[in-house]
Length: 524
Image (cartoon, rainbow, N blue to C red; front, top):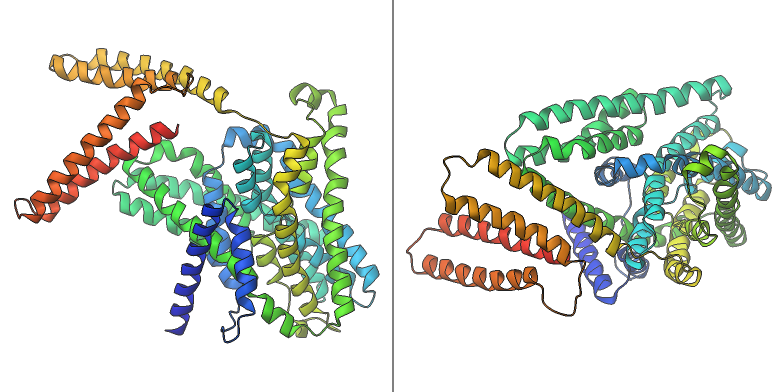
């Protein structure tokens, strides 16, 4: 019962912190991290210990899955080269160099242990970065790059942590063993993810009940992770591959009701998990400080070295990866040369988060390592890196982007593209209406024609002046007042006993759907 109470309290605090962040105009992860830090030192507050399984199975898979579901495959494919350079090349580069520098500072600690910590802190987390990027209007290519990097760098880091941990515990590690592990772990995860996606796609195509569709979607990342762990393959790769495939196919597999319902469910889960995980990071500080056996000077030096290393190395990597690659004619012909501010912003958007939290908890216990190693120090450094990058880089990223002028307003271009495609869609809809209107009442045909034309006009009106009310805006305003009146009549009828509760529920659902559609049209 006590664990349930703690969970409820965490969720309540996470929701309250997110609400406060939105009201103040801050990014929720930053507010929740600070709240966790403050609460961790409140006298009498019970310590909350984070188990590795909670993060690896309960938190990380659904976060990766929903991110993959929402990722555009065409945009991802167009940015594949820079994404792989960051998600694979930069992670390996950061892990090796950071590990080597840490070994120079702590020569008594095995190099494999230092590389393992380097891999733990190497992958940035895009939750806070993309939240800030969208809020301040960073170019869409930068947002896509950060999202794509965060989807793939997790697998690279966790594979490196597993290999380095194997060397640390005495397992034979050579080029042959590393190659075999990469093929088995990453390749197996790729195959498993694709196989799982095909099976789940088949289930979605057969299911007609929206509740069952939701259940299958919710279970998918957890089932994939469990199977991947049993097969000793990469659960991260499997979940991401499954999410990318299904996200691209969902418009063809699910009914409209299932898509709307599933979107709402995943948005809620994503909101709660992101809030809880950053709150948990802050709440761990008191326990980490209490368990720390390494002296203060060494702790500060190691933390400062790792933080400086991951920040500087990301800059060192970004500029050659951005500009030297464009010396290749094929790359230069396909990709525009970005301004200097773009790689600078991407380099500064290196906040760490969930993946670092998950990875550090997988480090082997001290008693499994011949001669031991300072695991308490490594865990503290990893958590400190999460806190420092979020508080320093997270709070200053908007300022850096503004100073460098790395901003992009795509609202007009998006509205123009939408209007052009909507016009094409309207013509197709009207053609379908004409082809199938035989025998239908004229009033029905004219009503459907008016709806199609209204949608077409609304898309073009969004390109016009915002100073006066457009016909579509007037329609939305007046229809909303009509819906309010209808809803009021149904409620009175229910209260007076003239209709049962089921009738009110059905009518209210229809009115709610229509009103939500009006709100989406205005937001667009």
